[in-house]
Length: 361
Image 1 (cartoon, rainbow, N blue to C red):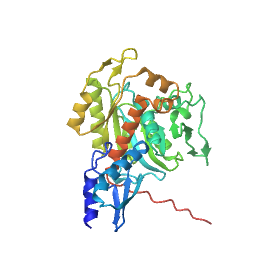
Image 2: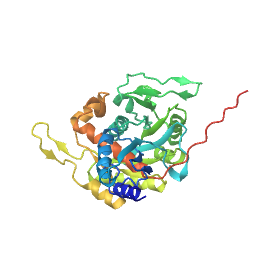
Image 3: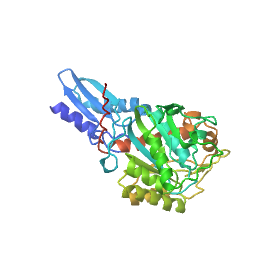
Image 4: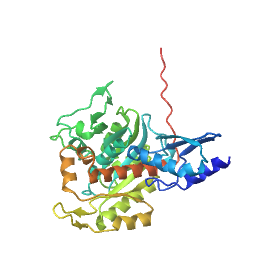
């Protein structure tokens, strides 16, 4: 019992960077069994972190070895992603554990580029991920995912869509259902209905996270998502400009009014690094997102550079995380993705849906 307490105390002092809290407080420590020869410790992380697992394993071993009094350590460290609470305790979708909304108060802040790279970042860290392009009027994800014009989802049973696979992601977009020559002139209710249809009639398969790339603003589409779909968390994308931050604040407040957990803010185009001389310049200002995060208790999950390469890679259909997985920019996206998932893992577990009952005749 004394050794077990010493183990728990040591784990109380171990705070992974992505989590920001210790393993005990995060509820990540399971069984601890100690006998004369060995100690068996189970740790279950609630977020994907494949690139950090081995380093964390060594951290845990280093922290525990001094208190084991010569015993061998059997460390069972793994990731287990669960559904987390959605607004108003709605049950999660049948094949989707967690829906994450990526939003912005205004256009032009790089939200869609951020959304696709965050989805790919979560996947690179070991999660099963889908991407829903909810911008009914200006879908851009088919281009960013590198899919050829005219790509259409397979239709099953006359009313269900099979997600289109791209870079390992399951994806769905209004861009798959209309042509460039078919302008979308729907009014709010019909557009909201299209989003509901794509969410509910897409045959998502065993997803840990579904990233929803929302249109900019705080209108009908956003409210439909908040009212009809179980959203485990929202991420607001902004730039350091004062006007963009004001709109981002509106987005944070909207989600909180409808009981959606705001996981944090992503500051895009935060700094420009000259490709010739390496000089750093904060073209759109500096520190605004951090000030906003303190006032609204929405942490800055990541700060991303203003980069021609990021834009060109997204426009070319191979986003940064897959185009240059070892680049500094790709690492920033993966770091941001881990932090948002880690923050979500600290919220309480959500309700699971009742399985469909099939009657055989």
